[in-house]
Image 1 (cartoon, rainbow over the protein chains, first blue to last red):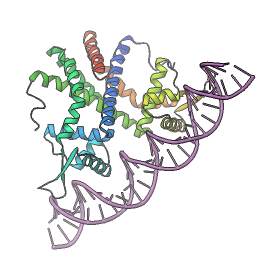
Image 2 (image 1 turned 135 degrees about the vertical axis):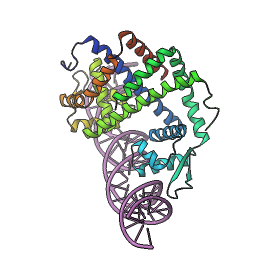
Image 3 (image 1 turned 60 degrees about the vertical axis):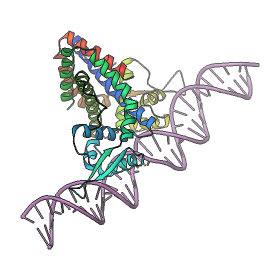
Image 4 (image 1 turned 90 degrees about the vertical axis):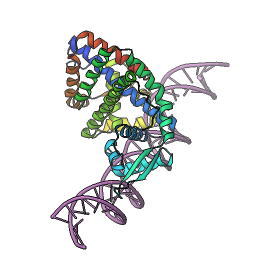
Length: 154
Length: 154
DNA sequence: ACACTTTACCTCACTGAGTGAGCTATTCTC
DNA sequence: GAGAATAGCTCACTCAGTGAGGTAAAGTGT
């Protein structure tokens, strides 16, 4: 079964197990997002957009269509379509900027936030409980490790 | 900024940091897959299919179009299209089953494996080095935590 | 042995998310 | 104030994925 690619190195094999777990986490996260999208009658991209917008709000960043397009790695036209869909569903409001007549500010509606919490709330709680099962020093270890992993992922 | 949703609870806030890191890892993993897809002239779905097929090979599971469709969460027709694309690109071979005349077995070509290693090899090495920076007991801690996280993700 | 159902995979016609070309309106720069 | 740059948009198009439905092989009951 394709010998030579993974030499028999116990240490490397152990580390590989952990890496496979990371991949599994990424996979299941995506699956959860997809499931939410389906139940909410949205598309995966729309959900990713909502998440980005909420992150922006949390971080105090002004979310414009151009900013969102960069976040999603899509063209501005596709992002316009996403915003139209979210606007039609009542999940996003488009507020014209006072300082820049060209620009628009995107605001996630309260109903969308509530919808998100209804689905992701329990999941988030489970994750927080799982994390709080670790003592502070262990949490720091995991945090440092995950930070190093994000760096390694580029 | 939407008070009441995240009450000021230091312990919860610390755990939330870790959860956000998990999300960041998932995001960057997807971005890496997307980048590979672009450089290889494939689609995200095609790459996901290849990864599933390689996992099947590693696990000793016989990969059929129907099995792949289930893995990808897509219809059999869409999966047929994926296989055609991968076949045309020389990344997959379709071998008819001897025991069941209806069924086909999917085999990833050596060139596809080499292509994957060329891109993911360095990334994987970085992840393994990051993981091996932990001592065995710390690796076990991370492993157990990530296992609990996958469970929490459903 | 023979009809009946199920399974595995496929083709065809269609939908719609995302792209490229190119537009308008507003702001910045000299 | 003219020219360049920026923000966002519409239009025409492409193509990944779906629904309907078909074919061939395997299983099932009589």
